[in-house]
Image 1 (spheres, rainbow, N blue to C red):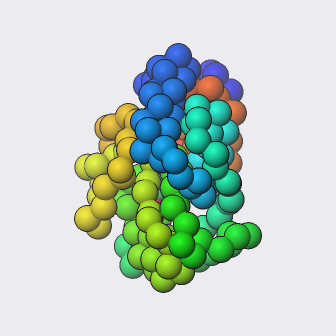
Image 2 (cartoon, rainbow, N blue to C red):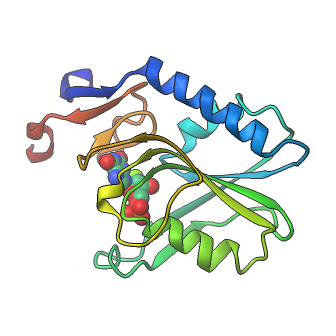
Length: 180
Ligand code: XMP
Ligand code: MG
């Protein structure tokens, strides 16, 4: 698996340091509150697990899985809910945990078409990675870890064809991996 990686972009140590920093910021942000922390599956589950251990206020967690609707829908922003939340967000301070924001369409749908309509009290977004160059909707996370160049990355929850999620760092795949 490691042999398929051309370059390590962000090391395990760098990621862990950033996760700690984000956890500290979120602990200050949510002081005296009890946020509902929502993990957007699958990619964000590794970040979610590390992040919540760095948050010092009481939290509840839930999971949601979404996917683009069909092949041509990346640009239309239509997103399908594969797994919905178990709990109600009504009146809750909601923190969405994302692995990476690319076009921004997934998150835009989650915020505007799902969580706002369900009357969340507040909605904040924390993402570990951001590719602002690829944005097609006007959307910014409230807390961002690393800004990445416009390259496809794997590891730390992120996959290529469902593989590489278990790498502890973020890397770029060798071109021959895509073509084989
Ligand atoms: P949008 O475009 O809606 O998409 O912001 C965000 C989702 O796209 C996936 N994504 C990636 N997955 N390596 C990955 O493994 C990448 O470089 C990458 N860029 C985007 C990811 O699932 C994210 O939640
Ligand atoms: Mg993915």
